[in-house]
Image 1 (tube, rainbow, N blue to C red):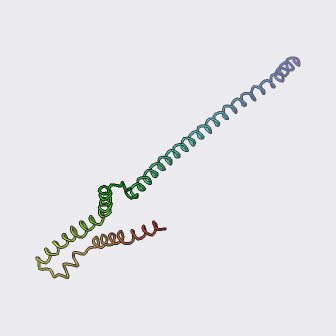
Image 2: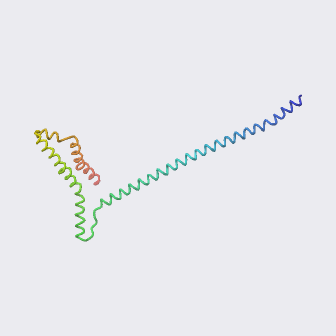
Image 3: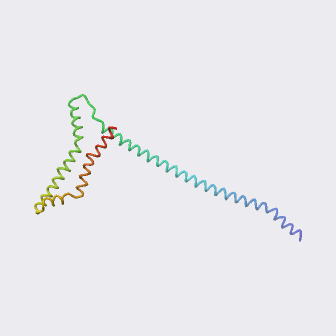
Length: 170
């Protein structure tokens, strides 16, 4: 009986280190697989960040190119016409510059003074024909929209232009 017990326990004691070693190897493999998964996820996150960085840089480069194109276009428009030496052609260029600089004032006077003024004058006469007092007609014709339009025009022609000229002279 002692021999059977020693045989069983002797075999178990010899087998135990092998079982423990096999368990450790299995744990090591599991740990390596987990670390590999974590490394792959970290590499994937790094790749996404790198792609985002490349996309942001590309967008910045595109915006810089568009801004540079706008700057170049504005500089080209701001340059005065170069003299050619031909007095007729140079005179035409001067007239072209004058006409170009008069576009805004002419459009402002035409639409805001002539067109809008004629519209308001026609409304005034309609109100007078309907037996309204002239003071009541004027009060009805001057609305908050008219007030806003008038001050936006004044702001454009006097404030905005004065600020631009001061900035250009600096």
